[in-house]
Structures are given as C-alpha cells and as structure tokens.
Amino acid sequence: MEAWKVRHEGSPEHVEMPLAVLQQGLADGDWELTDEVMGPADTAWRPVEEHPVLEDLAAEIEEPPPAPHEEEANLDMTAMIDVCMVLLIFTILTTTVAAIQKQLEAPTAEQNKARVKVITKDKLAEQMIHVVAKVVNGETVVKVEDKEVPLAQLGGELRRYATATKTSLLLEHDDFVPQDVVIQIIDKAKGAGLDRVHMLVP
Image (cartoon, rainbow, N blue to C red):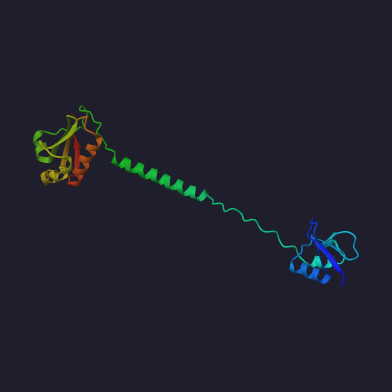
C-alpha cells in the first residue's frame, strides 16, 4: 500500500501513512484541512482541502467554530444612580420640612399696635406661668415664678405649676438666650399640658 506524506502547515517535518489512515485522522480531527499532503504520485505539497483525492472528504468535515470571546460583564449603573437621586431628594425634602416645623414664629408686633395683648400683673398671676430666661456669666438661667430651675427639670416644674386656670405660659427672655433654648422651653411647656405660649414684648 502506497504511503502518503502529511505535515502541519509550514512545518519542515512530515510523517508517512496509508491513505485510509490519513482519511481517518482527518475525520477524527487529528489533522486540519489546512495541513499539507503529498500523494505517491504528487511532486508538490498541497493543502488537504485542495487535494483532488481528499477534497470530497474535506467538504464533509466542518471547520470547528471559533471559540467565542467572553464579553466582560458590565454593570449598568444608570438604575442605581436614579435610585440614589430619588433617595437624596427625599432626604432633602424631609429634612427641610422638619426644619420648618421647628421654626419659632417669633412675634413681630409693636407696642403701639392694637393687637398687642396687654396683661396686668394680677391677670398674669391668675392665668399664666411666668418663665424668665436670661444669660448670666455666659450661662442660660431659667426661672419659673422667680424660682431658678435647671432646664432638664423644667417640664416637671411646669406640671407642678399648671392648674385648671393656669393653662398658658408667658415666656420672657433676652436677646442673648440661644434660640434652641427658647425652643426647648416651648416644647417642655407643651409637654406639660399648657395649651399656649406667649412671648413677652418688652
């Protein structure tokens, strides 16, 4: 049986084998269609797919599909950014509303206006709890009915003074008292059950 020569494309080395073995090797994938062969009667190397003896077999053999390149996984950040923007806007709006609710509606009335309520000392003693807040030596001092009371104990002290007739509070403070202290006094008055807080206009 005449031997066929076969080599990988461009290789200087070759091997010899019967035609049947070569055909089986092509079917099994041991040899590629671009590898070169030389038959017993050939004088030059030819690619397997171009040799007249093997071209029918080469046509039946399908080239393996190229290996797919795995695409890099890309995370779409658009949806996450949209959610973060919505949460940010919600947080800003919530904080703004909370800050507005805490704002103190300070009276802007002038003494010469008719709507300014004039309270006599007798009426003050009957209907209101008088609270004075001043800054003394750099510290805020709060007095309830001329009795100095720590700010932390102000709520309990106001409950003690609150009666069926004394249902409101008259708050007197100077310009040096921090605004947050004024707000705390108002909050504690509401917590003690007083229905209104009046600001004393000097």
